[in-house]
Amino acid sequence: MRRAVVLGGSVAGLLAARVLSDHADEVVVLEPDDLAEHGTGRGAPQRDQLHAVLSMGHVQLERWLPGLTAELVGGGAHLGEGPRAVRFFVDGVLKAPVPRLRMLGATRPFIEQHIRRRVLALPNVVVRRERAYDLLFSGGRVCGVRFSAMGDGVHGDIEADLVVDAMGRASRLAAWLERGGWEPPPSDRMTVDLGYATASFHRGDELPGTVIAHSMPGPASAYLPARCEPGALAAVEGDRWSVVLAGYADYRPGRGPQEFLTRLRRCVAPLREVAERCAMDGDVRTFHFPESRRRRFTQLTRFPGGLVAVGDSVASVNPIYGQGLTLATLQASSLSAHLRTGADPHAPAWEYFRRVRTVVDAAWQLSTTADLAQPHVTGPYPRGYRLMRWAGDRITTASVLDTRVNETFMDVVNMRAHPKALTRPSLLLRAARVLAAR
Ligand SMILES: Cc1cc2nc3c(=O)[nH]c(=O)nc-3n(C[C@H](O)[C@H](O)[C@H](O)COP(=O)(O)OP(=O)(O)OC[C@H]3O[C@@H](n4cnc5c(N)ncnc54)[C@H](O)[C@@H]3O)c2cc1C
Image (cartoon, rainbow, N blue to C red; front, side, top):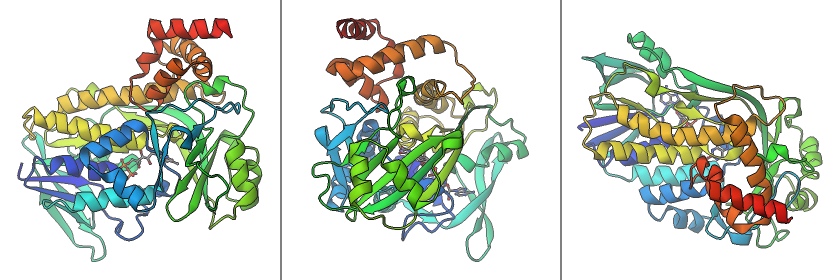
């Protein structure tokens, strides 16, 4: 390819740019926000919230940007491995650590800035402060993008062999396709009505050896009696704890620091410790996430060539399961696999969208099965839901008692294994034996 143009310079866009740098003479990333300095921008307001990178996300990040984890740790991030990353269920039970799992203690802007620095150091990748506002079509394919430059308001067109939509949840791709005479992809939605609140605390020696502690709901944890508030903390760069609380429907956490501390005192022990011993630094920042959403490109019969989508523009799932960034890394790898087959970038990228469907199906299945167990979530129910819920319930309970069940469970939670691994007869049998012996 002569030129690929990526719309959106956040994590999914940057990783797509990294992949495309192997296939195009020039990769141009259009991003309206100035992300160079603080790494925050209005285009992705969720950057303020604590972000976890799942194990599979680490594997994929290292694949595309080798040495990134060491750079992050060198810059002040913390690595949570083994007993340094503790996980509780919402009923307060501590789970056994899984040795091969790693989590990173760092803020989202810090992680993103490191990714940006690495990607923009590639000789054929540039970022331009421009907002895309339409696609250009010619001969059954997308051949470019119409943009306006930030600041001086200059408008212009840029030609491209391949355009990547990485504009996040608010992507206007569907409207642009319709305007160009193409059908927009149908979408699936599930109302989850989730509230998030993140606050930063000064960190001392109150929790030596702890990098991550969380009691966020996982698959099937809604079946357990909740004895503590869902929440998580991470030791992040700059000697801070980043602490997040979550709640559904009317129980969404608010902005008040006192309310935050009161709820934090009802969390699992490490979070309570921070509430008691550490001073809050700055404001409580909230975020409302109304619904999980995915676009089903593979259900279309016509689609222009020269166009793919990555990241939240394709699927944005309940963030409580921490899948979004990892999905973006897997989509980057899907794009690479697609292009490495020698696919013509000017042709419709069906094979790419089929690969992406596999990873999105897995994330969607995991998150929506767990969400459907919440009393305020009313559907739609997927085929096989009863079996998935039944299996999830047993596996969750057995995972607290048995290391082997726990390892598979955690592999699925960390997207290292497909959720169907939880319904494998040998695992169900083992879980049944564990539960019978209890
Ligand atoms: C509260 C909350 C907590 C979360 N926690 C986690 C977590 O713990 N772990 C995890 O993995 N994921 C988490 N996520 C999900 C994660 O934030 C997203 O999956 C991830 O940011 C998706 O990256 P993206 O690049 O697709 O989109 P975004 O990060 O949303 O970025 C989209 C980019 O596109 C740009 N853009 C928009 N319009 C245009 C345009 N017209 N032209 C050019 N550029 C444009 C924007 O400025 C922005 O930079 C969380 C999400 C939320 C809401």
